[in-house]
Image (cartoon, rainbow, N blue to C red; front, side, top):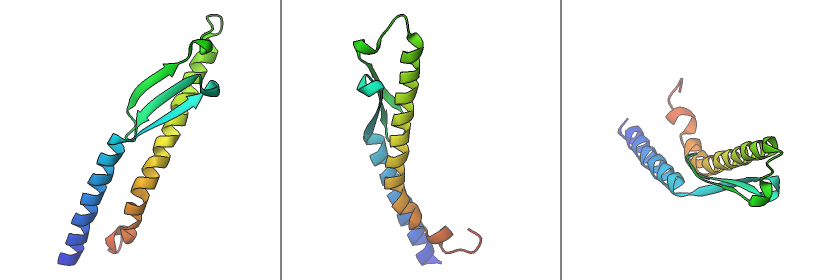
Length: 103
C-alpha cells in the first residue's frame, strides 16, 4: 500500500509539473489564410488576437467574425493536441486506475 501511495504522489507531482509547463506554452490558431490569428496558452487562456488590415471589410463584417471564430477554434484544437501530448503519457501511467479494481 505504501508503494501505491508513493506512485500516486509521484504521478501527482508529474501532473503538476506538466500543468505548469502547459501554462507557459503558447499556440496560435489562424484563419482566412493567416489574416486572423488567436494565440492561447496551453491552458486555453487567450493572450492575443491579431487581425490584418486586409481582413477588414466594412461591408462584410460577418466574414471577419467567422474568421475570428475559426481562428479561435484552430487555437483551441492546438491546445487540445498540446495537452494530449503532455498529459497523455502521464494518464497512461496510471495503469487503469492505479491498478485498483473499479478505478
